[in-house]
Image 1 (cartoon, rainbow, N blue to C red):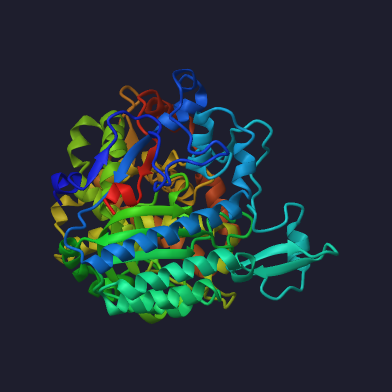
Image 2 (image 1 turned 45 degrees about the horizontal axis):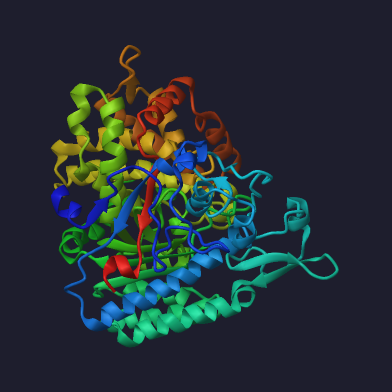
Length: 562
């Protein structure tokens, strides 16, 4: 893939500072009683919070919309407006009244950092609070009463308490009760549903219009499966939206409650056509997994597909902390077994992270004789097959204890991400053997994966991706897959040992998931999920070089010329 082509679709900020003052159409900065905050003053830029803001590289989210008809351009506007509602709902789920929080903060740098993190906890520093007077982040966010214990929840005979789409509250007598999202957020969700119906009325693709109508119904009923099925059937639309309560990363108590988010997307038709052929190989890849037959008995749907998109708007969970660069959905296991899943590669966000973060890290930490193996093509493939790998393995435990998600509870997300990371590499090697990928470039994938780990482990223990990468780093290092030169502090991959270690770690994670082995998963995470002294020193070197920790977006109608 040409990096120059993607660069035309994306503009990185010249200086790695906090954001410029945004327009009212953008979601890049919070509002306060005084209106939109201005850029931090010179005095504020010298404070530690301003330094944290400056560690995020600003990226302008844009795309060429000239090939779209007037209806699709109008639909994008409605979808952005609906996404803003998801943004406001996510604030309610993870903090509450953001206006009350802003009223406690005087300097604009801290307000800006609150905006990046959707709250007063630094998502890339293990949720450390950075606003005076704010305590530790509640593990259950605002999905549960803060004074609720796990014992109380487990003992409660409460229909719907385990649903992805209920809030747990106390009634007037103090007894736990489950409140469905569509009731708790009725006004906001009705408004968002109406915007989706307006977009459906003008969208060019009938399949997309049908999906939008069903998704609107889902927002006001909490029945998302019909719209998930319709989204899987929708193949030809030049635009797309992912919207609603989707991922459960924010619920660190049970890993159950879904958080609101949205992505508004424009399809790269050329690259989507090139990626489509990989989906047909999923059944064969499942059969070849390096694990006993029982752990790969489920067959992935053959209707799965791969597509490339330009992201033009992020909101809510998707926009908090570290930014997503690829999507694998739906999460519903029944939909996955029936139809597979869709993997959406967000090209412009991916290119931004590679240019601003991965390459500078590789310059610093990868051995000079292997530095040429760090390429954007390999980064793109690693991310793409990470998403493909979510559809492989097993969704239901072998012992009949329910789904893997239900059995591993709060560990489910980190192990699913770890599975996807390592199986992605495994699949690239297999596709090379099948002649579908250039086998000679597998070394690029291995070295680029290592460089990418240094990017991800900076996310901290509060991130499922960071946890997964920390386990992979320590496991692969223990297996001799790579080594660190004490003199230069640079890392080299042992390609033969890397291949063997990828197989063994794949088998270990797949087995833990299939067995629903919470104790084994916790043991692996405790043993391999810690940052060692040498890595901690190397991460400090990255910070000293002022390499961005992640990206933030300048986005909205005005940016797109709508």
